Amino acid sequence: MVSRKTARIIQLADALSGRRVLHLRDAAALLGVSEMTIRRDVADNPGQFAFLGGHIVPAGEIEPDAPYELAREADSHATAKREACVQAARHIRPDETIFIDCGTTLEYLVELIPENYSITAVCYSLNVAEKLTRKPNVRIVMLGGVYHPSSASFSGNSGLETLDSLGINVAFLSAAGVDPGRGATCVHFHEVSVKQKVISLARESHLVVDLSKIGKLKPAFFAPIGVFRSIITEEGETQLPSL
Amino acid sequence: MVSRKTARIIQLADALSGRRVLHLRDAAALLGVSEMTIRRDVADNPGQFAFLGGHIVPAGEIEPDAPYELAREADSHATAKREACVQAARHIRPDETIFIDCGTTLEYLVELIPENYSITAVCYSLNVAEKLTRKPNVRIVMLGGVYHPSSASFSGNSGLETLDSLGINVAFLSAAGVDPGRGATCVHFHEVSVKQKVISLARESHLVVDLSKIGKLKPAFFAPIGVFRSIITEEGETQLPSL
DNA sequence: CAACTTTTGTGAAAATTATCACAAATAGCT
DNA sequence: AGCTATTTGTGATAATTTTCACAAAAGTTG
Image (cartoon, each protein chain N blue to C red):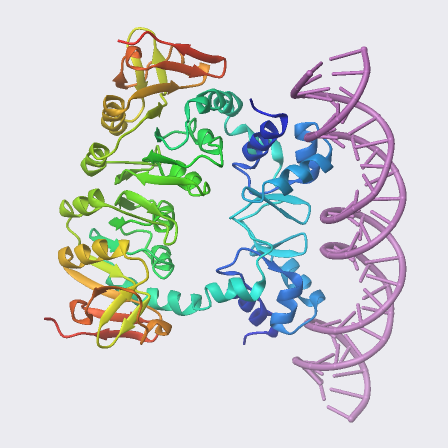
């Protein structure tokens, strides 16, 4: 049985889809209940809605309660990452196929794809895929599999098999740690097989990281430094001798 | 010359990147000026920032002033679709695997998955996948492939092969047209192979459509009515004789 | 440096939003 | 129906945000 309350939640969600904010006043008028009831509905579904100064907004899109410094810390290297991607973007050439790794770093790369370039972009992260859909001239290939919330990415055999049918010109990889001796490492093991296969198949691979990653060692190793054509940071590109 | 004000605007924009909202208070503390000054900065750049209950938000992301009814118009059958999904949701059982077709209709189904059910959901549409990520107990399996903007979905051989490794208890399919004689049809040909394979593999398949689809015939045929266990609309469920 | 313009800060008043307690209405159950 | 539990509405109060006027500070120009 669908309670009256559940029905309202659904109506609210519907009203909110398509627009980003809905004023409490309008929501109450729309559903024909008091503002207090809407307040309670919203408060009872913190995973779905949030309040922002009298307006209802979809949770997730906006997190008004996240303390500032924390959220900032989460992406304190945003400027560095963006700058690194600016450098990396010089390797994107029209009519080619590129691979974009998961993680926050390379999300900025998507925005930097020139609008008039028609390219094919291969990805396996939901975030990257979504950003790619905003680029009209980009053909998107998604590697499927089981979803991993920690990195918003997918992994699985079928995704790996998809790679076999692709020709990748340039692969942009990111890492959570770059150790001078050991090489590139990441946090999540499931990413390793995808990264390794991409590196083995792509004509050239570039490691794109901000400087804060240099010297760090994370649990999942995926490649020695030598396999990359270059390492790209916010300070520029370091060419590596080809093997 | 960069005026003090311009510099602040840039700082503000930077602070706002990476997070979606910034409280006036924090912005003032961050830039070392009074709240009033921040207010004036924001007010002077309506194209870039907006205010929403004490928070600064990027303009465009949020348009508090957009007339409500306009946005509402977009999906006229939304209520019917949602109601059909309410009926369909009764077929979701805990610990099972379900398939969710692409299209706007079944997006509502995601919200109706009970929070305490841990299920596996198979999908091939970006919209559905994104909604699924909001459900903490749902394991998501995504079929990859090439992206089709018209339906926000993916298709390709690898996605089809992924299906071979899955056991699907219940499949929820949607259609753009349901012709009494010919059967279920959709608009995009690339969806056909996915739908057909899902129907052949799933233990039971249900067709979920709003009544406006009944009697319509669309270019891409994918299944006769008889293959479905039932047809579910906003008016209820019609059982079909099993073959 | 003086006169002028622009920018910034402060505090009070007005408007808006949030919270709470309690009454009224509704639904569920025997 | 009669009882209980839950949901919803109302109005008062508290907290917050917005607006405004004016003073202080900083920047400009001759």
